[in-house]
Length: 114
Length: 115
Image 1 (cartoon, rainbow over the protein chains, first blue to last red):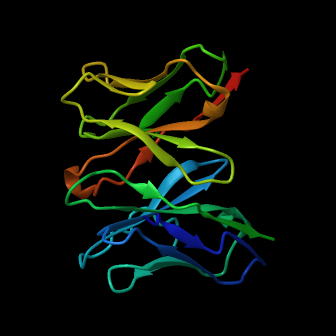
Image 2 (tube, one colour):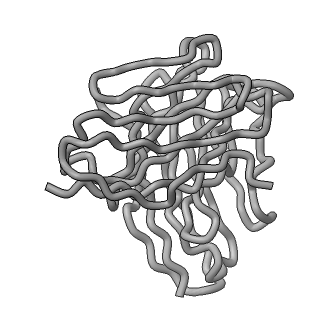
């Protein structure tokens, strides 16, 4: 079946612009996670969604970062007023948490802020 | 505070040899320990995972060894192949205290298997 998909695969933006990154989880997966992968920080958790519960935003690095999940499926990560330190690969993962702890990752969006 | 420490940073093994990557954790609430394999330009792919109620889990050429008292776990790749050349990440998670099984990753090990 189809895995987690993310778009765009690459995004180059100017400092100060806003960007939106999209994640389509595996169909039926109730949990959705966003992670960031950078050379300096490695892989780090950003935000978590599970069903209709309030999201866990504890990993968001600043208030310029926000995310939403519509209809329990697609999620969008928004970064406002991008900075050069936001350059990284943004990864989305989904899981059927009621059954298993396994998280399956998408291919990521490589964000470059110039 | 780095909660999952992974070593070595890089590893070179000959084809047919055994690759061993080690991880240590600090948070005793962790109860799920997966390993991920990542090729350049791709997302991490789940390789194998273990819960703390067992000391070893084997899937094909991949084995996780788990030592709860030492808070350590390791990945062994038997009969390593050039196609195994990738970056490997250990991770840990729990649902304790509302952690929601978010993954805490090690820094990664770049494995090169020479033909």
